[in-house]
Each structure stands twice: as structure tokens, then as C-alpha cells.
Image (tube, rainbow, N blue to C red):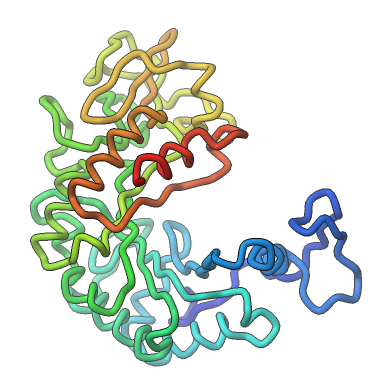
Length: 329
């Protein structure tokens, strides 16, 4: 979101990159003169193969949320820019709607927003007006269930009427962004004795959103397909001290489930999720078993379902996504 408008951040990847036959969904290589290449064309091929798939274009995220304050100042112009981009004639058939990932309205993410309590509701209302009832309009939102925290900072209850669902980001609660610990699971389902921050768990976040009037069936529980970890740890159970982030393939302190499953297998569970102590490293992550627990809980709460971030963290045979599907029934 730049200058108060929806923009494409990487046009080469989205519309121009040429896929080989081996890498493409259809098994046919892109040609130099075709009208649309890139990931958008691959999504088009995926929808041709699986017609029931819905594809949404998401705007914002941790890195790209800085422009939302300006968007909130003129929500109608913002919504018009998003619709024009999503429905560009070159790829209008690819997208079924839009997802807004504002981190975070009237609160701090990478930068701090001071647009006010009502700005999120105003923005989502404008999007629904512009896109109409036939498009999906969704939002990825904070899962800060603490008193006076990020959920309390914006009108998520009032905005819910304009949205098909919320992706509640119930992960990244704790991690080596606090390098000395205490070690704690990054995606606890419930609170537990010794949790470093009250309200930093899935159950408290969902309860708070429900208390603000968000219908249960518009809430999706977030699952991380990765772990967060520390090094320099001597205590096997949560609550130990650390010296920094554990080594990771792409980034210190983070590793895919498909790697951790073998490199640092789970040694215990707490608050509905798993942790692992190996050498002097301590990791927390979800397993097929803990996902089963979380899905049973989601069903008991009448939630609309679950979502995950992100696919490449799963095993080649899809252990985690299978656990989500089977658990939701």
C-alpha cells in the first residue's frame, strides 16, 4: 500500500517471469509473446485445474503496511485503486477478492499508526462498497488478546459486517526477537502458568474478538508451518533463559516444520502446542498431533475454519495441511 493506494510490489514475479514446463502448473512452458506470464498465469492455470479454488490478492503485511494510514484518510480512493488493480483486464479472471493485512490499525507494527479507532471499519466498509457482494473481502488481523492491546485499538467488531472472514494471526507471540528469552511457545492455544505476557494466546484472542461482536464463523484460527527458537538454552521446559536466536536455514530464530521434525523433534507439549529441546537449542512449533488438538478446539468454538503460513514449511506429503483438513472434518 503506497501513497494510499493498492500497488503491485513485484511485477516481474507476478506477471512477467517465464515458467519452464517442469515448473509450471500445466506442464507447458511459457512463451515470449504470451499476454500474461509470471505467478498470476500460474494461478490461472491452477484455477483451470481446480475450479473451486478461490484466489485473493493480499495487500499489506509486516513490510508493506506503512501506506494504510494514508489510505484510511481517503478510503474511497483506496478502494477504487484496489478494485482497478485486482480487476485489471489482463488478470481479471484470476482473482476472487481481496485480503487486507494491515499491521496494525491504530497500533504499532514495523511503524506506528495513529489513524484512530474507527479507521479500520471505515476502510473495510469502503472496500465492500467498491467490490460488492460477489467478491470475497477478508482481513488478516492481530491476535493480541491482552487488555488494552492491539485488538482493543481498532474496531474489529464493527468492521466484521463488511468482511467474509478474519484470518486471526495466532502465532509469533513469543520468539528470539526477545533474544534472552524466556523461552515460550510462539503459538500457544491457551494460557499457561508462567506465560510471559497475559493474553498472548489463541483462546484469549478469539474470546476477545467474539466479545466485540465478531461472529464465530467469521474467525479462522492461524497455524504456523514453522518454529521459533533460541540458542544458549539449558532448561528443557519453557521459561528458560537464552543467549540469542537459534540458527535457521533462511533467518536466525525461524525454521520450517519440515526441517525441525527431524533436526529437533518435539520433546514435550504445553498449552496445546509442541516444544523441542536439542543440544542447547529450544524450539516451539505445531505438529500434526497439536494441530489436531487446535482443530478440535476450533470446531468446539464454532470457528469458520483455519488458515496457515505458509505452505513451503510443510513436508512434501503435506503432513500439516492434512492434519488441518482432517481435524476440521
